[in-house]
Amino acid sequence: MELRKDYLLDKYVIVAADRAKRPSDFMKEKEEERNNNICPFCPGNEHMTPEETGRHHENNGWKIRWFTNKFPAVEMSKGDGVIRTDKDFFTYSDAHGVHELIIDTPIHHQQMWDLDSRHLADLLGAYNYRTEELYRIPGIYYVAVFKNHGKEAGTSIYHSHSQVIGFNAVPSLVRELLDACKHYDGCPFCRIIEAEMNSERKVAETENFLSFAPYASVFPFEAWIFPKRHARALGNLKDCFFELAHMLKGILGSLKQLNCSYNIIFVNSPLDADLHFHIRVIPRISKQGGFEMLGSYINAVSPEQAAAFYRGEQS
Ligand SMILES: [Zn+2]
Ligand SMILES: [Zn+2]
Image 1 (tube, helix red, strand yellow):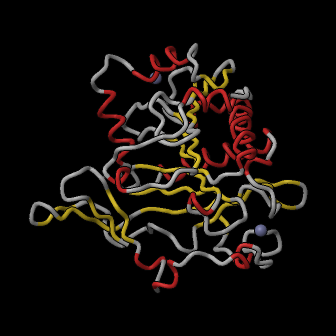
Image 2 (cartoon, helix red, strand yellow; image 1 turned 180 degrees about the vertical axis):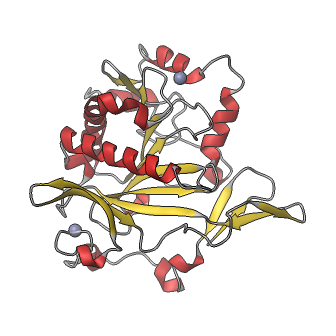
């Protein structure tokens, strides 16, 4: 596995050619595979996964468990993981890090939007625990936490799971946000939260959190959740995980009505920076075409309509 940077742009790609060996592996999964009754993530099949690195116990079994991905995108390399440049344009290193899976629930047919707020809060606890642990590993500069639900969002296994990748580069979105923040005195997101608090794009508000459809939403029904107080990581919000879980549950409940694929990304700050932590929920309803490949987007649902949908108002 190798980490490579774009010739010019600050964008990195992990070239993990081992993950799909034959062209047939790129073919779409067959429906019978989706309903395969031998599920490696179900209780009783724990031996089918790599060795467990931890679990959230419940009764005699587990509620949430995590282990290294059998098909990791990054690995602890024998090299130093230091990024080098050859001949000006070829920037690379080993794809150095740890790729873990977190199994969200022991129940095969229970999706994230079916979990209650208490369970979601425990899941946030697991995300945070793994994030903090992986940041302790030398050479890991960013820990990405994300969830893929449904085929259009990149899921290959039906049983609900989340992913954590700690690696030796900072994702370009996070870098771009940090660079953009430098143009403001103080944190611009703290001001954006103030501005969206009374806007038509507001989805929900609790004592500590605000959710809204972002002003220039790239994806239909995109929703962001911010802590109102400036916090740089999920770990700074341990006192209100249940409240955050409850807000996330509200958004997921709406997505269940759409029955759509979605991604959730947890935008943590790198350790040496102070980005305002937030969660982005990104439904994968629209297809990406050529215009989008240029970095331009057409969104058929206005953020104001999306927010009304999440608030339960018929439009
Ligand atoms: Zn299962
Ligand atoms: Zn802030």
